[in-house]
Amino acid sequence: MATATKTAKKVTKTATKTVETNTLTARGIARKGALAYVGLYGAAYERAQLRWSQVRSTTDGLFDQLVERGEEIEVKATEAFKTTQTKVSEGIEAGTERVKAVLPASANDRVAELETEIKALNKKIVALGKKATTSAKTKVKMKTEKTSKAA
Image 1 (cartoon, rainbow, N blue to C red):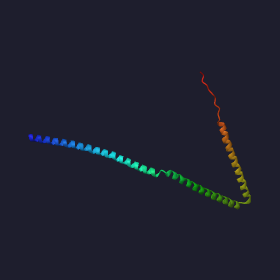
Image 2 (tube, one colour):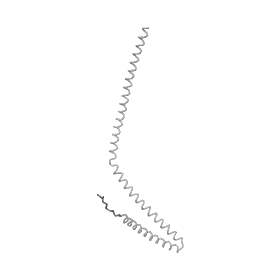
Image 3 (cartoon, rainbow, N blue to C red):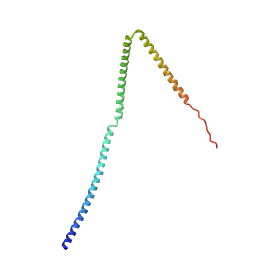
Image 4 (cartoon, rainbow, N blue to C red):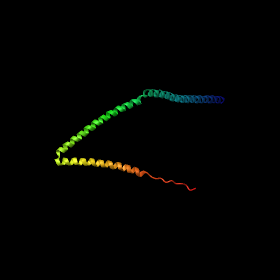
């Protein structure tokens, strides 16, 4: 029986050393993993700083270039709009003339009368609109009364 207890003690000591060794190894692995994680973020930060400096150096004059391009496009768009507007107004006038030619002569005179009447009414509307805005401004003025506290 004495031999059985000696063997059991040896097994117990060996198992304890194995557990301690595994624990130390696990701590070391966890520490190395954490350090690798921090190192990864450090490398990513340095890489981002490098890309930021590259982007900044290439885009220093970009805003001014974009403004110039925008001005060029604005000029082209304005010219295109004006030519289109001229073409459309000429087309409408030509169409109006064709319609007037088809209608009887008395109708043509009536169209001219109505056009002059419309112009006169538009002028009146504009004048009334101006009067309304000026009268509204005068109504807004308010008098304030001074109040004093009774002591």
